[in-house]
Length: 193
Ligand code: GDP
Image 1 (cartoon, helix red, strand yellow):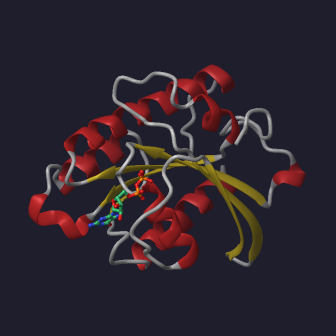
Image 2 (cartoon, rainbow, N blue to C red):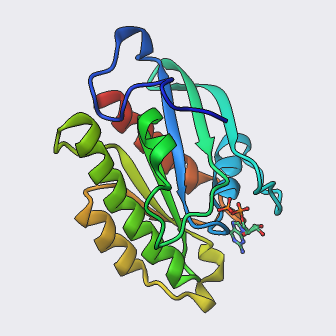
């Protein structure tokens, strides 16, 4: 999926015609549950196994606060490692907002989420020359695995505070409500931006 050039950089002034088009991108380590979280939000279901070797672009019409929106969500297949510097190239140029996902039972995925949040900020400053915050939310997934957690909820919360973004621990395997609430919050953030 080539996304470059289709939209405006996040946070830059949006054209009026685009106001009902919302573009989000999911970022985080492979295996953190990005696809599971997204599919939960879009379909209220948990399937268990998701194709992870292709870029996927999901579309959905939804209504938030009485507004009809065309939502597009990019779920890239690229491996997003702590060391990787170029992971954001495509989604950052395209998306209005970002969902950064880590797995609470995998510390490396949390370190990667930290890195991704910094990269989003840097990339946005480069493309928009603005220091205003880009709409992002941080998701600590696999809360059902809290008996083997490697990242405390406090760590997730303070990372989110550092980046002034909403945060929630969720379980794509068990819960729809919290995931839905978080996406709605992010979409509102994009609409107000
Ligand atoms: P992605 O590579 O980040 O898109 O991750 P996937 O959505 O493909 O999920 C990776 C694996 O984690 C799959 O085996 C999922 O079934 C599993 N998984 C995803 N979310 C959860 C969750 O909330 N709890 C548990 N226990 N497993 C999950």
